[in-house]
Amino acid sequence: MVEIRKHDSLPSIIVREEDKKEFRADFRSALLSCNAALKRLLDMPDLEIQNEAIAIDADCVNRFVDERINEIMSTKMMTSDNKKSAKKEWEKIRHAALENVQVIQNFFTGYPDAETRQDGDTIVCDNVDALVIEHCKRVVPKDAQVHYDLWCAVRDAIDELRAWERERDLKKFTLEGVLRHGFTPEQFAKWWCEGSFY
Image (cartoon, rainbow, N blue to C red; front, top):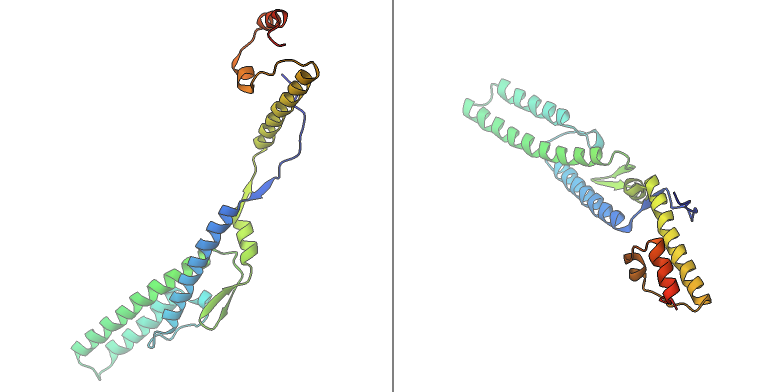
């Protein structure tokens, strides 16, 4: 086996610009969706729940709505039809609220390493650049270094071949011609003796 000379080391991790661009777009979209859902949730006039986005969950919404429905169903001040109608309205509120909670929770579970803070009805991420780098890292396989060294060895050998041919004023075969001919040692020697190289 031919000994392959080591060349410059490849980086062990790369971050491709196209990955960064895609991640930023996805992250921005998820954050915008989260903020829109939080705003809709906080703007629901009848829904009194925790204002901190990360603390809002389905249990919190269900507990609040169930309490309201239980109050309505136990009151003596409403007719049965009014109770059913009010219960139906609270179920609609529950459904809308849970959809928004799901969007918010999807953001936090999708980006657990995002350093976020809430500013009113807006979630702000303070470590976007670090997040992009962390999520877009690609580990370069060890075989890539071997492959790179082999490529460089071929390039170096071609450079050496061309320099050697120039020094001796020999014909320069195209690289394709060199690679295409599977010379046996006898054929190569014959070409040399016949003057095919000069």
